[in-house]
Length: 321
Ligand SMILES: Cc1cc2nc3c(=O)[nH]c(=O)nc-3n(C[C@H](O)[C@H](O)[C@H](O)COP(=O)(O)OP(=O)(O)OC[C@H]3O[C@@H](n4cnc5c(N)ncnc54)[C@H](O)[C@@H]3O)c2cc1C
Image (tube, rainbow, N blue to C red):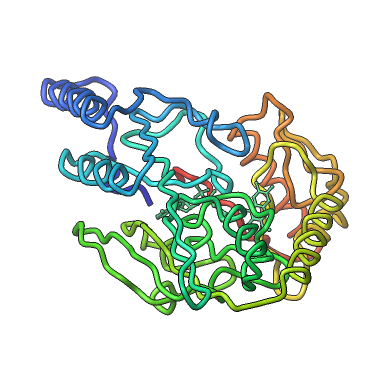
């Protein structure tokens, strides 16, 4: 969901619409000035896939204060806005996004007593996982090579190699639709397989920080485990620009296996191709567009449904749908 999305387009502007559009532009300029933001910042530069048109206003929030200031300015001026992390799970539209796009880079972290880790939501999860391993703290080793931020991982309940973020989350600080900061427990998120309440109708909430409860472990064992996970990723996952797994695994099966069995490895729409190494990864060969990616998704879904009667559900988020 797009916060405060404006709907309805008019082809021949009335005086009222022209005035509103002027107002929209005025509000954009005000935000750019107030936040030191970029006008029409190209999102492709920040997305793991290398796809995405311009954001009318693009804010890189480098601290919690900058994040809070950007959200409160957008709310005050009644501009649609959206917070993202590493853009490693989002297919962004070629036409770009209206309003304010905030990329969260607030990343302070504290390793506290009793193997508790407090971290701001813009911190890269993989780096925290590696630091935890070096300290002999167990619980995040599965994430040593997982792209993206802590915020994105909570929204998607990211996981790998049998672990998931829900298992180690003790509490989180969230900013509510009314602008109030609250401390919530893991139950609040309603975590499921790669889902949380923040995906469906809950996108009015912004994750500011998380506290993870880890466990004391053996440094050498954790290092060996981390190396094995990293090697497994390198062996099984393609290196090109992608969003990781496009579809969720259906119960009792693997999306990649089904796509491969349907004969779709190497299938292509425009500049997007189904990886020949891992069929659930779609690679942008350089000139791919969001339209290509979405068309390839539909083709794969239709073919897998036709051959195996299985409906593949997206794991990635198609933004703007
Ligand atoms: C090569 C590759 C491999 C991958 N492997 C895995 C894997 O093994 N397991 C797995 O689970 N995922 C995997 N992914 C997907 C991705 O890494 C995860 O989903 C990751 O947690 C997304 O984090 P992000 O910061 O990039 O989120 P984004 O893509 O930036 O955002 C995802 C969603 O979260 C929301 N969001 C982000 N930050 C906040 C915040 N602070 N407050 C509120 N909402 C927020 C956004 O609005 C958006 O809806 C992979 C991706 C790639 C590219």
